[in-house]
Image 1 (cartoon, protein in one colour):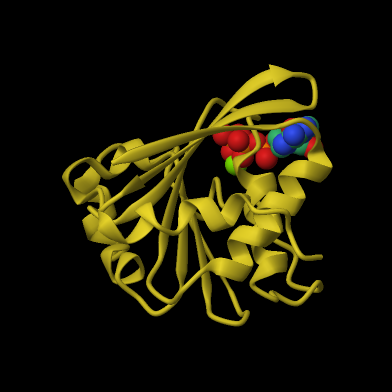
Image 2 (cartoon, rainbow, N blue to C red):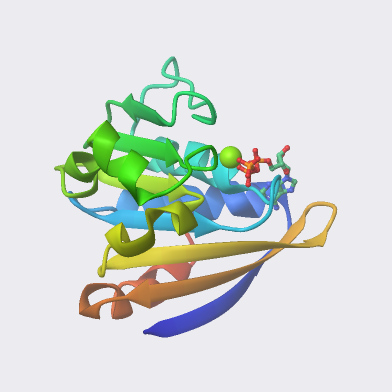
Length: 159
Ligand SMILES: Nc1ncnc2c1ncn2[C@@H]1O[C@H](COP(=O)(O)OP(=O)(O)OP(=O)(O)O)[C@@H](O)[C@H]1O
Ligand SMILES: [Mg+2]
């Protein structure tokens, strides 16, 4: 487990970082996002969608009520928001495990609800308010795969 701290000083920086994440994503990747309400998890996911080439007409909206949205892109994007779920039993009942180990990129807001279903291999992105438009971000790679993949994510984005 390795943690790298970065600052996303503006909305534009968050979007550039998200695009980079989307470009670097591989089928079966899982990104969990932690942080308070309004920290920027859905905003970052929208930018990941751009990097994944999700068509602009497939506007990425918060799955707070539907729990899961799926979008077409270079690979499918499965976007979950588990805020409203009580526990992992509910997640099992909904069949979400199929998405965790599917062929797309899985982005999960409020992954705390996963309990014992928390995947061993994942990138966790923790977002914290550092100012009105500034966010402190911790990137933690769980599992061997992510360790080497974090530094290239931070290289200046080739726009
Ligand atoms: N640097 C930044 N990064 C991300 N969002 C920012 C930044 N600066 C300002 N914002 C704004 O903060 C808000 C973040 O809201 P968003 O819905 O993405 O949060 P969230 O973490 O998904 O919240 P929730 O837990 O309710 O789902 C947006 O209105 C966004 O424009
Ligand atoms: Mg959200």
